[in-house]
Image 1 (tube, rainbow, N blue to C red):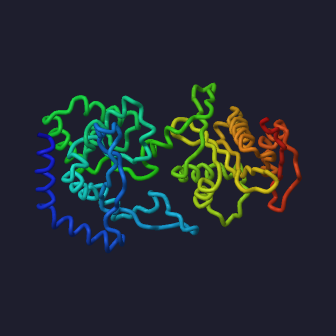
Image 2 (image 1 turned 90 degrees about the vertical axis):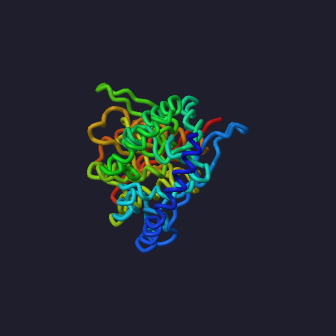
Image 3 (image 1 turned 180 degrees about the vertical axis):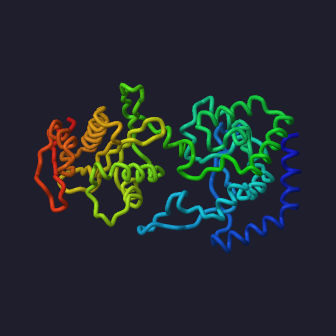
Length: 366
């Protein structure tokens, strides 16, 4: 019954809305260029024969430009989405090509939203129940917060839908979706999402630090998709932690560079990035790693966060077989200098940049 309704309504919609589809396609071509259709692999319903999710190609109208940085890498979503693209997303017109996915049988009109294939390893067994049905153009999570929801909340709504699926429930979701679209609510892009990417949000936590105020700081490796968070943190702490960079280098391109080619630890309170250790452990002479920045927001200093970040960075360098770790800091950063001296770093004096260089020879694992 549900599949028959999907086929009828998606086919009818494609015919009735064909002038709208053609008009949007022309506007996308003029304002954003080619290709007009954005295609991406998504995880679909579990195949009963294999027990694995079917992977399908999802179709949407393109809503972002191809803007790149100086190195030729695409800028993040926040910087590539245009005013026209935001209108498409706010009105959900960018989703119209998914009617073809529904007609083909990849999707349903109502169901859990199809997510990235890269997220598959990060679902719990109970959350994976969301793939017991076809993914939908809209769903229970979409009418209860959409991207304003945390992942655990979103998946709870998905599982609730699967366990209580009904024709009446689908009708109610469709009606609520129309209201959401007309009000243009809960439409977020890139770093605006409540928790960002699932694979980043659920990456392994290396250390938890309980603070006297009751906050819990979680330290983990950062992913390239968090470049906006890293750039914003570096901008906030730059006055207190002079960064050993050429003044012409802006925070965002630098954040992108280190997250692409380097190794970056992040310290988080909830979803907020409050500290970082930024450096490189690749292709250095003399078996050396280099830490370019170790910084913590002012309100969280003297809590052992900087020491924990440095300790974890040293451990990773040793695990990679690196013997020497070098780092720099500004002469006015007395707290950092005391930390480095306590941990056995030796000063090599002031460099041309005005920063003090420290080095440490670490014991390798036997």
